[in-house]
Amino acid sequence: MPDIRVSAAVIVDDEGRVLVVRKKGTTRFMQPGGKPEPGEGPAQTLIRELHEELGILLDEGDLEPLGTFISEAANEPGHRVIADAFATSIDPATVTVQAELAELRWITRDEIGDLPLAPLSTEHLLPLAWA
Image (tube, rainbow, N blue to C red; front, top):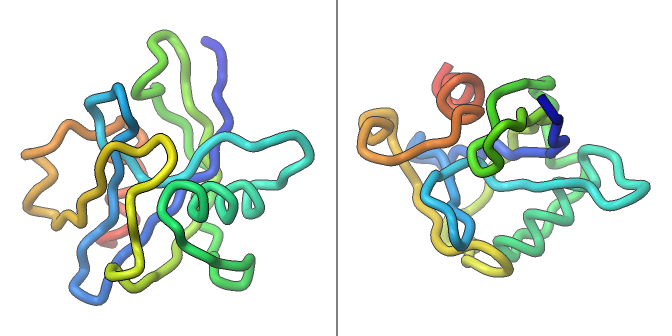
């Protein structure tokens, strides 16, 4: 099974809600983030992606490493995603949908069953957010 390497953010607001996003042309919600460009490390990738997708400006000191996680890819059948995950916090009022994103939502644990979510989110990242 081919691998897709990504960096992903677990972002929890002051109310305990977790930010998930949906890319244009897809149905599943997932943590924001994306694929590295040549020469980027995982934290650099996430900082760039959060700026491009959500208008968020962070530096490496704002990110707490959570580990590396593997799941079936949500939008590329027959692939698996290997994600370097980081936790951070932001002001929800500063987030705007940009770039390839179609929508964002701040969700609670009770809303997990109401949204189509990526396997990486349900298997690894959302449980970390509410641990």
